[in-house]
Image 1 (cartoon, rainbow, N blue to C red):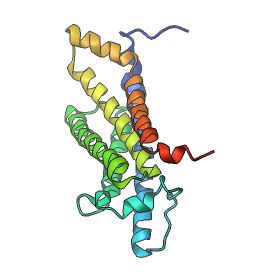
Image 2 (cartoon, helix red, strand yellow):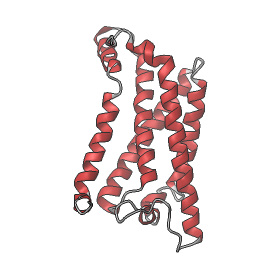
Image 3 (spheres, rainbow, N blue to C red):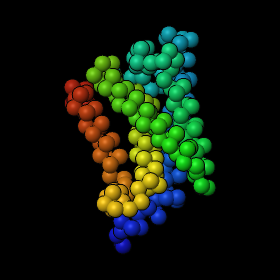
Image 4 (tube, rainbow, N blue to C red):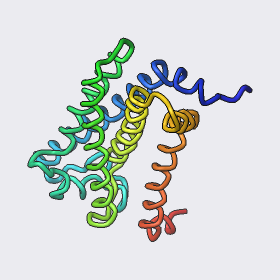
Amino acid sequence: MTELSTDDAPAVLFPRLVPWILGVCGVVGLVASFTLTVEKFELASNPDYVPSCSISPVLNCGSIMDTDQAAVFGFPNSLLGITGFAALLTIAVMMGRKTSALIMLGMQAGLTAGVVFIGWLIFQSLYRIDALCPYCMAVWVATIVAFWYVTLRNADDYIRGGVARKILNAVLSIHSLIPVLWILAIVGLIIQHFWWYWSTLG
């Protein structure tokens, strides 16, 4: 099998692969956010309702939905997800054609804010609420992956030459490594924090 060279990497990623990656992230995030919203309103209308993602003492959406962190701006966080991932999916479809720099920069700003927000939510889930929401975790992964590939897409547009371009091309040649390591780091934190529970299984 021929190894991908750093010079070939941008041509492989842009415009062929990245729109598909962002589209998948948009679909996953949108479905997860929509499901969370439905579950939240079901729980609000029926206090005895058990959300479908309340599986165990650790994987328990119900205990998260009742917290202030689940509605930071006065409404369910999942409504932000529906809006943001719908926009991401729309832009992913549009990226088959030339996407304006303004749209790409706007998406960069939105996803940067999103990845900071989910970082805070991850901390809250692990160290304050002490529970995990499977749908939320799907949103975490979708946001991280989308942020990374939009950042690469914008960097490819603005970094043209010199050492920075060589570094970028090297990163592009191993583009999947960073989000994989990022997600594995979160998995490691989850395993470590809830080891008291995982060790009782099996």
